Image (cartoon, rainbow, N blue to C red):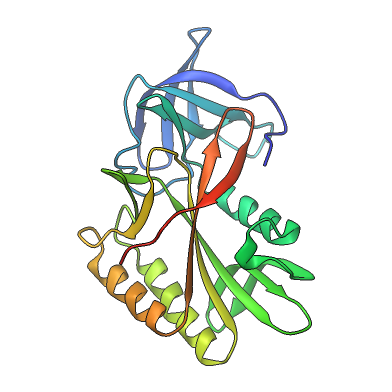
Length: 230
């Protein structure tokens, strides 16, 4: 996924009210950017750190920038939670994730029951529902999800188990937007209920695919699958 226009460089002043971040640009202009990440952003917040923003030319938007990434310990961490969905959709269409290759029809935002999943794919032999989650939390060499209790995420796991029970392929695709980790696991201490449901989902046949992304100011690309520990 290449950024359609040049990103704007600055340094983080502070993030507040979950969805707002003040940034000092290189020309010493202070701007407010929209933060799409509603979680705690633990391990990817550092005041004074380098950040990149996307300029937004939308008269309806109060904020004229979207926060894309932050530099932590010398490497970029993607914090825009909308980007993993784009990455996942493009990857399934292109067949670049080997486990999700071979589909001839791919669509975003498809409902099953009372849940809406990020990607639906099918071919002549099977149908597949894929839920995509953004992962930014780091602890040691682990990438963890979630970084806050997620009742919505819990609901998605329950519904994916229903999908599987109907004989349809069900996949949890975790997009890890940082390169300083090498194993994925559920954040048991933050949301033990989610961790337990994920364990149940795996036993029920829901597939877990953790994909690591390389984040740069020019593009974000999925580079490899990480091992998964319960």
